[in-house]
Image 1 (tube, rainbow, N blue to C red):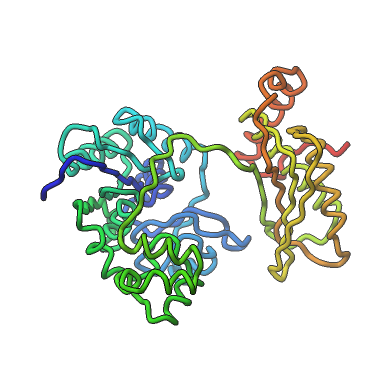
Image 2: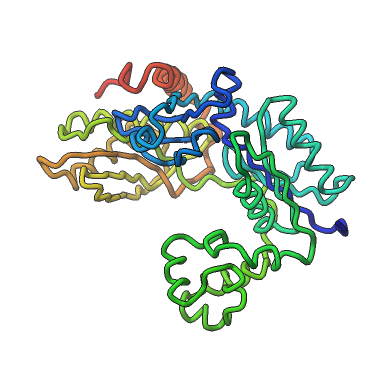
Length: 391
């Protein structure tokens, strides 16, 4: 395979990351059907599942109760996000040792621009994959191409072609000039930007594969889908000029909770809102942010979901202000007798200026310390073990 060392993008995906971390913590789980997630009797969902579990049809985001029905001998492991965050940061440091052109996508995914690194793309991928396994015992799959779209799709193709009980550890490389041919046979919903609704609309137009989409007149596609149609036409040709983004600006901060049982008592909801408001405030303070728009999210027991927001004249990261605004918003939508399944609090319209001095205020520092202690206790023993009192 020839590769003129022009732009070279590597996409890394840690295979079944949460499960791999749990196998590090408990080697007896290796080779067994298990899932990381919540209690099936309390509406828990599958956060990640082992490859043996996937043979029974268990998938991420599936209700845990359904997962147990599909795989009755499924082992359920509670999430340990502190362990996941720690290992994710260690892998990220390893990536930064390779290049400073790293874009973190999520806790287990990243793009790297390896254009200036010596060696063939395959040798770079193999060395990185081996290094992550040897240092941290984490399997990974890699896609390499001339742009982010194709590199990510290459990783997906490598993982999907895998069969067996072991992680794929796939390396899939798409050489320059072969982008459109690589995409051509793939189902259209493997293209970034094609969700279920768009897939259905494209299907009605006779478009089933990415190749079908690439051949469809771009002007007609734009008439049907607007600018999104034009963008999809370009992507179907394998065109993607997006740069590596090494830093992202935080746009909002939010926390939400799904209850193990529907809640109908307003006083209990107000307590939960207060807890969420303090968590949001803690994250804002920790990241030296303030926000002007406070939002709540409420999901009733029939799954109807609504959001309400209010924009202040000034930015804030004060937990009491956020809490009071959230409670006022709840008052405006509250219906006596209705049950609530989920509630959330968020702050957006962030303002990072005029923050530096405020972070050193004694009251802010005290609130940060208190909230860090609360977070640690709730992480270990559950949300109900302790909370701030209502004033």
